Image 1 (tube, rainbow, N blue to C red):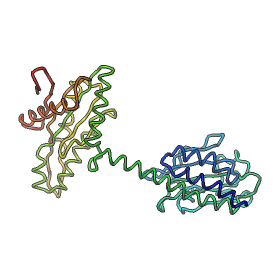
Image 2 (cartoon, rainbow, N blue to C red):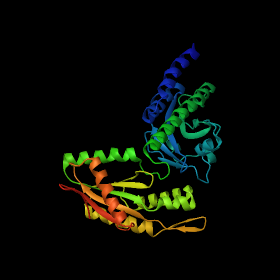
Image 3 (cartoon, rainbow, N blue to C red):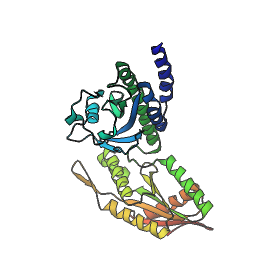
Image 4 (cartoon, rainbow, N blue to C red):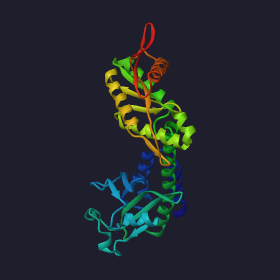
Length: 342
């Protein structure tokens, strides 16, 4: 009968955990999971593998606890030990090594009972679940431990799925070589900014960039050298714009930038800076120094323009910059008589 009740409680929780909502997962961990094993306190940390940092996602403590825990500490705390070994750490109330498991918040707990459960997805740790203060007992039972052993893999799998989904979303919206947003995402942002201009007034500027002589680099040194050149240009572009600006890889050797609430003179300053940054830092490929340069079209637009207007203007301005000898920029504008590039 007891096993049936436990199973009846576990099954719906397992179903609810099978989701892509980290807030729902955190809520289940904090509000429902502790009831299964009579734990008073719980905290859920998510691991950022790039920095080896555990970030607090949710908890039910009535006092402040660590928001971030670094795994690169000399002191091997129980949580770090659990992560490194990928195994549960069980702390009992009476059988404890005080010098090893002393916690800065230990005075807030009624007991020293604790289960520290690394959350596993595809044999990798993706987070940690801590359950502390066994209610009315000196230690967590074998059944309690078995339940947490099960749930640490269920929770870990869900968190792993979220990370995979988020990564796929990023890949769908960005260019794999440069890390800039891709063509489709650029147009989504451009349409959004144009609607904002139409609704609230104001203008935005756009910069269209074309690499000079990429075909020659590919033909002379190979396509890997061409890719290195594209990456260098993208890095220089990113270094010359603000966080609110949106830079995209528009095509093979073309880039585009949206600059919200920016005048054409300010955008021209950005364009000039990009030209100088790109031309001032050649790349070295197999001991060969390869000079880089770009041609740029700059324009200012309002809500009456369309993305197609901007594309037509940019094509004309880039052609004008190329005709002027490359490694320069021209300002484009849409007038009643057509496209003018100055």
